[in-house]
Amino acid sequence: MSTGMIVLTVIVAVAVVAAAIAPTLRGRGRRGGAGLKRRFGPEYERAVALHDGDTKAAERELAERVERHGELRERPLDAAGREQYEARWTAVQEHFVDSPRQAVAEADRLLAELAVARGYPDGGHYEEQLSALSVHHADHVDGYRRVHRVARAGASDAMTEAGSGTEEMRTALVGARALFDDLTHSAPEPGRHRATSPASWAFNRSHPKES
Image (cartoon, rainbow, N blue to C red; front, side, top):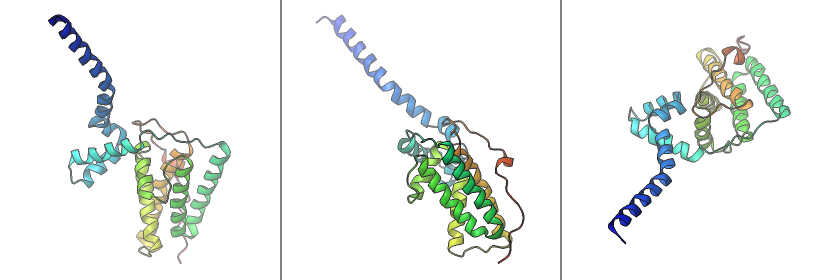
């Protein structure tokens, strides 16, 4: 084989390999830096803070979440199922007036159940479920995190139903409503953040009865 043919063969081989790995490289590029910031929004800043400002470590963690859950496709809810979940959430909000602690616990369970219905990991594996939700609902997943934390604190009698405890429970429930709205309606495309109007998740702000 002539030298010219050898050189041509090498060039063609290099071009074929480059074409084959290009999609992988582009995918990695989207998951790093600016791509992760766009996709995760407030979750990106939270991850950086949890890693004491170590951006690289935070980005590795977020990239791992995308690797595990990025291909998840949400199952749709039919109209009847959506109405049932909305009715149950309304009942949670009404229950809050008389029993904030129980209402928050109900909201936590309802979100876990709803996430499973949409195709997310089982609610019994909270951390994995939360991780998956963060990939597809980054703007509002912290509402679930907060209501779960408050529900667990209430279950261990670490909070009271009066004063600042009640207000913290109220704030957690309001924040969780944003994720509930996301899960009961069409989900936004990955990397796009959808704002939720406060009016859509406001609820009766009457003070609950003291126990």
